[in-house]
Length: 215
Ligand SMILES: [Zn+2]
Ligand SMILES: [Zn+2]
Ligand SMILES: [Zn+2]
Ligand SMILES: [Zn+2]
Ligand SMILES: [Zn+2]
Image (cartoon, helix red, strand yellow):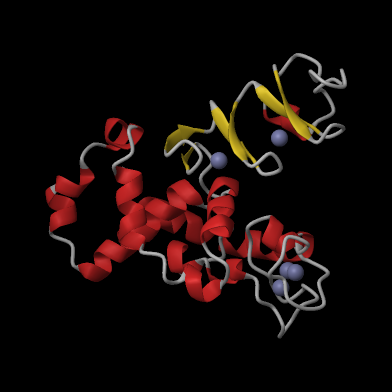
């Protein structure tokens, strides 16, 4: 079961190394705002940090992801969740009005979820939890399926279902979840079908794209 404490301890252990490297590599150069697509942090679905140029003026709504993922460390949003958030809310205030229980219901009522994890809602384990424990549990579910740690499985808002990262991935540029055989051609800036085939438009090969590293 993925809700167990083992996993939480594991992610806690990694806090130190990850935070230090994140701060050097992921930052934006905005001087104010960060509420638009021109901010690289916003684009990546992550909050700003102290090395960004925006301090004090930052209105990046992804600074408030602890609402979904809890406070134990800084998480980014999975690209599919990030896109859904951008579409659903305009700012941090609206983000914190999202009904977390409704979102949880959407996930656990999806087609694949019960097949993969069973009817957790009707389990004794869930029923005996108090409100606070339920919230922690919900945030753990969100981290596992909607954050940058959702690497094996993730919740696809495009497909309204839990997806296996080996079979599906979200193209942030084309704004859609794609089959694993689809790859994003940097030259055309569009996705093309066939992981070993050249781009259907320009004929460029997949070999130098970022994607081929994953397969
Ligand atoms: Zn920014
Ligand atoms: Zn930033
Ligand atoms: Zn910022
Ligand atoms: Zn998607
Ligand atoms: Zn694409």
